[in-house]
Length: 469
Image (tube, rainbow, N blue to C red; front, top):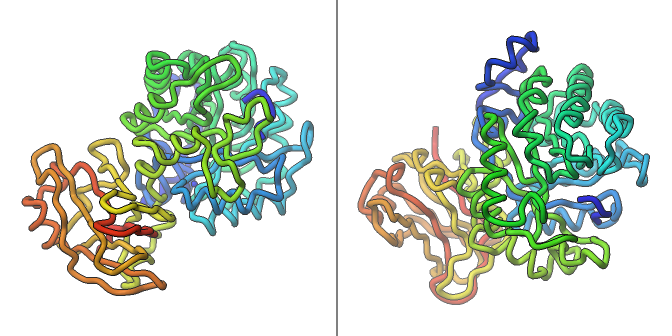
């Protein structure tokens, strides 16, 4: 954004081969050790599970005193990722090492993946500005190293304002090796040229930028405002062209409108869902008065959302409907787990606070066959679904939905209920799920999972799939 606006399998980082060879060989699997890695057009977490970002941007550099409350509120909204604005000191107040550590720790406490970006290079074409961003990360490398499973490094926000993909690529072909030579192996994110709104720079030169990364662990970001995301045709073309080079893409910023026109936010969210592409809305709060419509929340604590924020968070393709917690927070590589109180491993489908009115669904999760991140193939005879909620004990509905051959709307009977963590919980056994669904072919037929209230108002805190190894 050009005006002030207001994170099972571990794979070693592969060695950098000669560019003449690499340019002709597409990357298949690469990774930062113990951290996020790319495989084709997919992003995978440190446990080897697909990860699709659903998040927001947080304006730490301009409102550092509001960062903690903003992160907590974002987590409550169901966000799984935050992109945090920091500064190297050339244009805004420098974000210190202790501040960075605190931001990362707050993200961990709130079970959020943290993307860090230096905002001072925004719209600049000179390599000096990009190098200053790189120098900042070299100075802060000890904060990044060891946090590869939780932190993604967006080197510089919207560096290269001109619509010139060749010069943009040249800059990053120098910047990325400097980052890697310093021992920083976090997943890298690179904004495209043209203030982030020229995706043809990715289409035409993205492969050369990707190959400059000795770890082959880079994703690209498009900022979809009036130019890159103004209508459905443009949105789909830009996403398809970027994915066409065989590397992941994320919509790093977008909103419902911008300075020079409307933005097709509905298509951005629906097409990202279809293509398993991450998106991050701009921005939680703090935009200038002339761009106040870009604020997601009216208040820092998220007690009320703007029209744009309500669409982003509560829309049919919004964050609450499509976000899944990263599995680095739901199951670790050693087999540890939490959440059901049983010692079983678990996969989080939802974590936060979601309120359901009577006869409504508060949490709806798509399976991976329809663009979601929950794999129905994980459902097995030694597992069960677990829901934690507040209200009255017997007001919960748990539904398995199919529009591809199973029960269209299967209401599952709980196999166990009780209290835990000061809330009610309900478990839904494999046998009960099969009986209600009318089939054990969850992988082929299960399309969506819902939790809601049969009566009264209910607050849902977690929906998990638990299993025993």
